[in-house]
Length: 401
Image 1 (cartoon, one colour):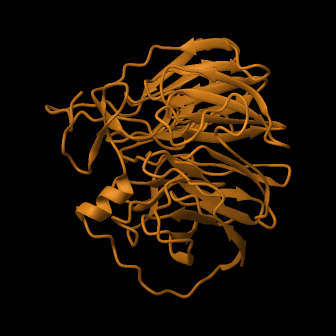
Image 2: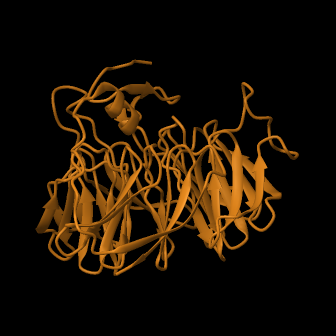
Image 3: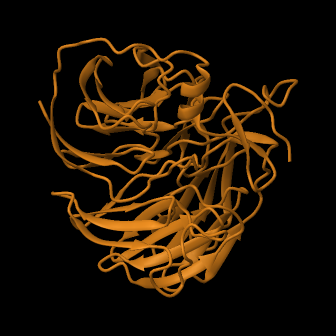
């Protein structure tokens, strides 16, 4: 295993490749670039804080982008110390909570082999699934927290699983994708064609399943489409070619959010391009030379991308042409973004949550959840935005004009 000092601090993954870990904490400690100072503005959106809660330990220093999952009026959260909890989404009240070791099949926390959640949670109906840093995948009853099944995959799980049509799709840090039976956790298929580079970002894009097809990003800068039922490859497309003389110059990854709309898949590669791909074939509809480690978020006519310096861009959904750029959050090491109505919402390294107008990128609202970094995309349910920081603090905000 090798350890290289570049851009931000590096950590060595269990798979043997060096990974850039802790974009937020490392940037703050090493002061690589001081974050742009926040300037006052006149809000154009009204943001009402509904509640906040601290039900779990959050992602901690794992580098995972842990965010809540929502189903049937409940919010589900998981933390690095083995905590899993269900909250009333309207009030933040804890409905049930579990810690690894409380029931059969779970290992006591804080031990050498403790369960440490970093992938998920994901929920579909009454099935709740979380993944662990030692390759554990656990399924719980969403209503009670009772055990359903557990499975073991090849490496740590730091991306949220996807659940569709009776199959749980799990992305592991060694580049594999597993299709597990949602009823009992048995293995249906495994995709093991990805080439894991010597150097990659710390984090994995959550697989996206649409119409029986799995779309997933890889550490080699490719987007792959697999058939959900058997894991067979339908197509692959490279978004980050990894060219250069040094390993740093060749650093390539597809690490952020993937989006789908009207038969088109949208994704962005680090040290590569942002692209719209025809879902049936992977053929590019357009490409834009814009590097991102957080992926994309979609609105009706635009795709929003946060570049490697945390500048926010709006591209035309049909052509990829640039509509505007907001540099007022530069070097604030933004997390993944989401859209709500006519706004984009994103958190930063200091716990601030920002809303930008989709029309021109101007600041529309700002609140502070905490003093901890926000890495994962906010979860939008109707007119409510749920945000979680790396310490496990969750806040709920109602947005109105």
